[in-house]
Length: 347
Ligand SMILES: [Fe+2]
Image (cartoon, protein in one colour):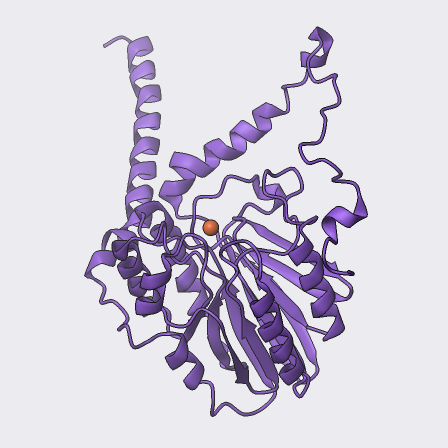
């Protein structure tokens, strides 16, 4: 073989090694999810009611809890990311300085509500070493949710805090629900903190989205009620991202990055994460725990998602040819009329 050919052969070997490393790392990162089916399901009796009863004897006013959402169990892609998240959640008590009382899911525990999806969720729940409390999401079949997860709307006490879990999977709250909610808020006044969880957020999490809540009458009313009763934090999911907003001094946290494939750019909140909340007497703080995706997902999807958003930035010469030059009319008549979005609240 000539010296030139030998040199080329040597050069060609490098990508081969690289490819082998990528394949090995991908398979390794896929291993936990590949064996999920062998993991025992958490028993059906380990439901919301059981989790709450395990908190009853807690004492002391220094503790933590974890919030996550939208794991959408039942698809290998989602379960793999959720399992990585759970690994990190389970390590939250490693310094043995703060009790982690429970994990709260803000709904969409299943991919689309099938029984098999609930079984997958129960396997994931079985991996979480803390009690798990979950709200219902719009992808969770109601009947099966009751069978596998338990009650949809309830309240509970943990130490100095009052927790209210609401069912708004349809997208709003009915009159009866508002009545019950206000009664619960009234009871919560006896405690240092009130925390509220519901699946769909009462505001626009991502303004450029098709999903708009900000001008919905129920959302406005909900936020005003939370302000009136000095709610400490409201947790929601639904949009698969992280977002923190403050309305009338109340913190609103959207934590929908619990496993489901994410489509929003990472720089705008589209990353997998969970939230750890720390209660210290009358103080409450929170931290977002960002967890990188399993390597095989990075290679097959997330790397390309970010690359596409990057490439999209080159898109923009269309106006030179008359595109995007017309102001579009609003879809809803009177959208800017205050009466539209506070309809029925002040009358
Ligand atoms: Fe979701």
